[in-house]
Length: 491
Image 1 (cartoon, one colour):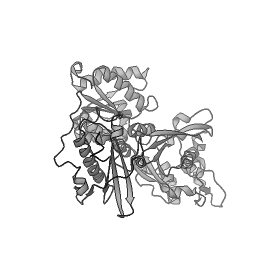
Image 2: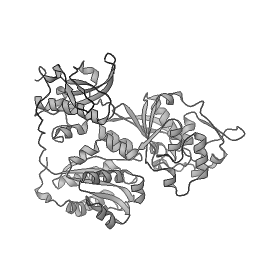
Image 3: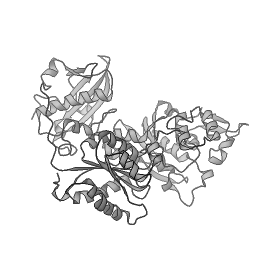
Image 4: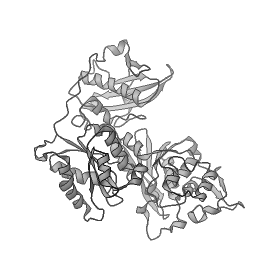
């Protein structure tokens, strides 16, 4: 055992918790681990904290050799030091299978200077390698990365990666499955799968006022992730669903409230794929906000009543909201981009809420959540960053992006397939697009982006869809890969 000469934890006083700083800390920690046990694989954790004695922020890295022999995530699928960092959460604290407290105190071995360079102290110099570390050699095989979004309710992203992954494995390919999302359907599943998170179930009223089970994802942070579509999406439409003019997003607010009841104070809310048009005012009403007409009479916030709303009272807003960090996972288009003609009524209500109707991420639920402190971010970018897509892409030989539909609006609003392709083009990594339909000049698009080897259309109407997807993969994607698949060796 190596316990006698290598610490299981390192603490680095840092000036900030930027991604560059975190990478620097992890690189030195993993370099030391690799130098001590080059054949080992491990369980890795990290935490941001504050040292009250030094009065400075501290970043703690753990390389746990107890977990090393039991880890399934490392080893075959993580080859170089950068590859190992794929599974490390480089944003906000990561605590996965174990808890930092269970490891005891950690020695302070080094500091990070202004340039991000590691400067070891006397204690750290005894451990930290002085020579550059040679990366571990990749396992043999040719790797296909599957990173599609869901197929518009026909086939979710996880199922699609399983279907295509099985077909690929049968032809000798190494497969990495990484379902993606952009704040709409599949957001919770993608983040749980990509971060090793878990889910909790809550009982909540849905679009129809019926009590049903809904999912709250929990990812390292801890951060709770919910989908507005789970409460008020197309899957909830039934015989008792009110017509659109009477339909409310009240259920979304109740789901937020239930998440607060679980004790979470960092909540990510995917706001896509809802079937309500009340600008999120129904969600606010569930959280205690009240709406009145010009005479002070209460108004139920639903589309047919929006014109009557003249006053908004936040005085009874759930007080826990003030102590909660709300992140809105949305597209980054503005309301005016989504609607060529700006809606005067929407602009009027936005002013009453105290929000900018043309701010990035505005529109729909974005208005309401911004009014109570929600910070809009690109849903696709945040999800791809958190699940480590960039590192996975760099280790892949070919990438399949995809989703239900792909058109000019998908690109403009940076939907998940477009965000994946953007990274593909930036990294000059070959791949293809696997979609239900593509409404654009495909020949021109392919000419413009040489890394994209093709656009494969598998209509959502094809039944059974799983069989159609396999046929499309075998007859179209495999030849596109340009590999003699019979000679490819799996890991």
